[in-house]
Length: 336
Ligand code: EPU
Image 1 (cartoon, rainbow, N blue to C red):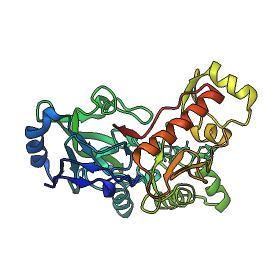
Image 2: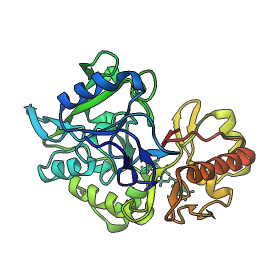
Image 3: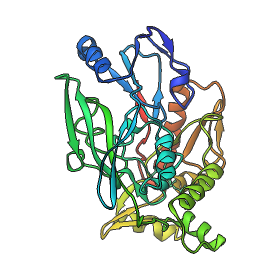
């Protein structure tokens, strides 16, 4: 257990704030002990730090989850059930699956962060969301200090959200996640626009899960900055979902707006497009900017403070609100 440390290595924005009380859990017992001491002090659970913005020094006790292990716990004719420690790096798990020829997570290649955080925000990319491979997870209640199993239906997954981000926010510590992966006859998801156009361009007839993973790697590395090199948390805002009437208002003046029709009356449009239309792609202010290849990614140019990044994000939000009357919602977790 460490006491007072800098959180710079623990958040991919690379913000240098001090945590007054910082512990690491390598197993469930470490978590039980931590909760015994700190449950009343509003503890903060930290995964890979890839979706979090610290605005200032943190007084709350922090528990960094470092539980490791990737184990096959059951097998059926077509599927395998794999239990993964919450502290495993997400992409290491994806690579392990590909090496074993287990399918389902290939579109989620290179998403930063840890396995335990993946269900909280139902990570998603290139046409696949985590809930499609999620079987269950174990989590410890901070109030009762007891382990509970959550099945898929308990988690109430939706676009970039789950029960752990809504009703049960900050109430549980996820310790491990069980995934259901395909062993054969993998169903390939190749319909996402940028993925499909690369497949067509290369004239790939039968993409395997390994090919899909490599193509996703290629697309991601071209558009999204590597957090090891440039501090960032991927998409800063969620893509807004609106009703048909509001969508048509935007469409009537901008018929080039990209959109995904979610249901009869629901449309999702890319926040990146809205920001770009406000001439904010590649926009820089002090040590903060939007990425020149992707307007939705806010980057730390070096020594930005959490507050500077937050204020920058607020000004983007205001500009989009003024021009489009759409209030963007943060995808990144902001910690006061
Ligand atoms: N676009 C712009 N300007 C830009 C970038 C994109 O106008 O600077 C438009 C383009 O028309 C493009 C469309 O936005 O076709 C969608 O862009 P992209 O495919 O990059 O996806 P996104 O909607 O911006 C979402 C996720 C990403 C995920 C990608 C790929 C959210 C908030 N973000 O981004 O997730 O990698 O799809 O599936 O849903 C993350 O959560 O941190 C993240 C990076």
